[in-house]
View 1 (cartoon, rainbow, N blue to C red):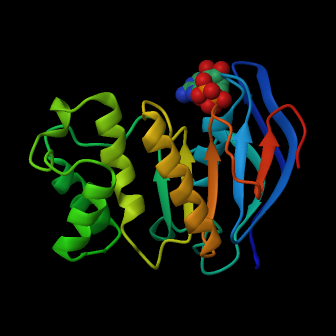
View 2 (cartoon, protein in one colour):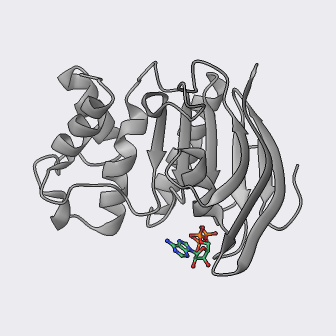
Length: 211
Ligand SMILES: Nc1ncnc2c1ncn2[C@@H]1O[C@H](COP(=O)(O)OP(=O)(O)OP(=O)(O)O)[C@@H](O)[C@H]1O
């Protein structure tokens, strides 16, 4: 499978503290790249740079077409980015949140696909409850539900601590879904303090070693 991202000479300094320097890595289609490191080491900062939301990281990042826009930045329509705090609209129901996320990517799924995704993440029965009335783990499940809708245009998942607040069963289910996406040729770049069991995971440790 082809190369998806190559990054070279990445440097980031915050409040006169160097978070990382001379950082270099490549990501291929089908890879799961696990970015590790202690709290405050710059994992979220790096993910935000990868999806083009942060300008504080210097250095080169190259995406092949069609993943890159003319500016050389990642094209947002080809990627799901799940931020550390679930991007869930609290006044909307899980069903509305999911439909809205997909619509932003110009995806209008069949109603049964939405129900299936919500059922898979254990939110059947809660589809009409405003997300603000759900628990932290359930809100995380709302954000994750889009990963269970098949969107052929999405080639990359960028996930920041996706296991936060999930129970043991939901963690195992999400791990399996990540593996399934990668086995089908999708690429995952993620942070997690939770160790992944998948054997094909590549990892990158900020301030540490790379594999
Ligand atoms: N907007 C900001 N302005 C100034 N400093 C910031 C900003 N965002 C993050 N930082 C600093 O950058 C450092 C790295 O933060 P970041 O969130 O990338 O770490 P992390 O490795 O993801 O941490 P955690 O494991 O706790 O999620 C922290 O020391 C943080 O204070």
